[in-house]
Amino acid sequence: MTTGRLKIGVFDSGFGGLTVLRALLPLLPHAEFLYLGDTARLPYGSKSRATIVRYALSSTRFLIEQGADFLVIACNTATALALKEIHDAAPVPVLGVIETGANEARSRSKTGDILVIGTDAMIGSHAYAAACSARGLRTLEKACPLLVPLVEEGWIDHPVTAEVVRIYLTELLEQAQEAELDPDTLVLGCTHYPLLRPMMEAAVSPGIRVIDSAQATASQAARMLASHMLPGQPPGDGTGTLSSRCRFFATDSVAKFQGLGARFLGSAIDEVELVDLGG
Ligand code: DGL
Image (cartoon, rainbow, N blue to C red; front, side, top):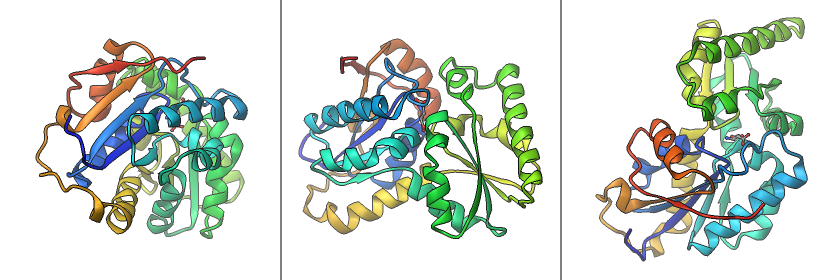
């Protein structure tokens, strides 16, 4: 990877954040990327706030040590539970995925009623509901704790996963009806879920649009960098290959990261560096 260009650190507990990296790559053709998947300590979504903060901070420190000039927290759970602590600890600008996702929901919804799904910890924090409420949206949230393990297992087209998705979303739609909501938007409040989008779309009525924050986060990162940082950075030529523009780090199996990561990223991942961030 070349040096001297703007380096963007992207962090998730696992592979999910690769959906955000995938959206960032074409929007920031002159930047280089450092992607960390904290796969050894995943899932974050079933952990306590204190543990999530501790993991998120050690991941942040690692990316800063690698030279990140800007951080994208491509994990809703870490954003919901640890964004303030990450901001306080990082000497560089930090962008999470929840405010950007709530902006996207605001711009897409006509009825103003939103459904949000995510991990136990993320939903328990009510961070999405707060961000949506601040934008005048009514929100019904549901934790779907089985989905991250199924995605991490690679069961992306599996009938068991389709059935689990159907059960969760049927329950959510029934709760929305009981609450007399008229939802037209389902927000995927976990960066692992975009891989299950076809199953999600099949499980809700056509009147409900399924959205995620990957594209909105990438656009917001590009705006922040254009106004604050890019002018002072060496431009680069924007034509590098994936392996010349990205370094990938994982805290557990490199082979699994390459295999499953390619499905999230939509491109082969040639090299992954194994790192130890402790317990
Ligand atoms: N991808 C993470 C998120 O967006 C969740 C995965 C986990 O539970 O670690 O919340």
